[in-house]
Length: 174
Image (cartoon, rainbow, N blue to C red; front, side, top):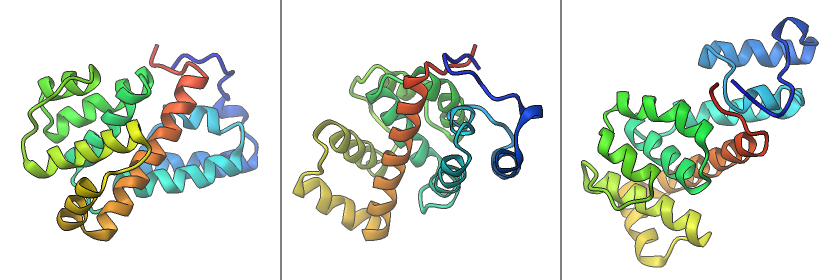
């Protein structure tokens, strides 16, 4: 991974960084993406890692749904690093190559289900307007429930934090 921020050497991590490193490796198996930056602040990295693990692995969303949300965020922030990490995951989860390209380029896209289309629309509206209009919000609550809406907003918010980190430090796959 390239970055304008000096990336920590895993062999030189102090005790708090080592603890975070072990936790990240146990859930993700690698230290790519924003974690390389966050490791400079082990407490931040520890909290972010736990929230990220929840947002990525423990919500009520199918993998294709959460990856769609992540790609909408990546497109909004024009975050190449996030796209490089999550586009292959989204494809493996079942999002078509055409859908992935459309989301990246912010073009209208025909998604596989009405639910996925609604999830995409909620994320886009939240990112563009910093709000969700009443009609779309009500549709989201009917389809996803209150917990689902809270988790959707959490995924969008967490991955916005990821995108900002990756963009601020110009972090991308080499």
